[in-house]
Length: 182
Image (cartoon, rainbow, N blue to C red; front, side):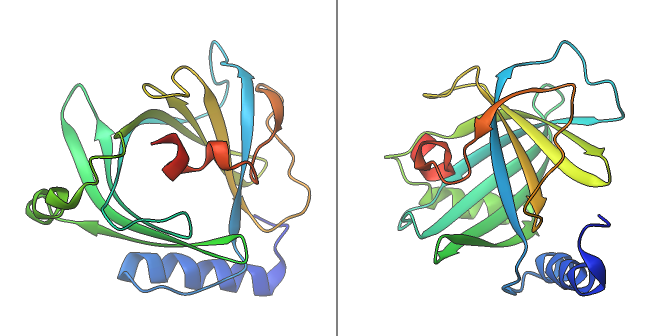
C-alpha cells in the first residue's frame, strides 16, 4: 500500500505484529465497508475463497465486541480458530486478534451469547491496486445473499475494484456492523 507513506507503513507493521502476538496496539489503521449491488460472476484477478463463521461472546456491547471466529473450508472442515476483540473509541475500531487452538475455541464457545446468531460468510480475499480487499457474502441472517466489501486503509479516497458493482459506502451504518447483523 503505497498511499501510506513511511510512517503509515511502520504503523501497519506494528499493528500486524501486535495482532500476531495478541497485543492491542491502537493505530490509525481502520477499515471501510461498501455494499455491493450485484455479485460478480467471476473475480478476474488472483483471489482466495474461505468460509468464515463469527460468534458473539457474552458481555459484548456495541463498543466492545468479543468474538470467536472460524476461517477455512466448510466442506472440507478444515479451520483456523481465532479470538477477536473489537473496541470502538470515538467511532474508530481497534481490533485485537489471536489464533487459538481448537481446544481453546471449544472451551470459549461455551460463552457464545445465545441472543445472537452465528454469522456465516463466504469471503473472497484479493489485492487490487496494492490494497487488500475482502468481499464477504452473507450465507444466513438478515443480510443473507448480500455482499459487503471490506478494505483496510487510512486513505481518504479508495480506488475500488472496477469489476465490482458498489452501491455505497456503509462504514458508518450500524446495520452493517457485526453485532447488529448477528
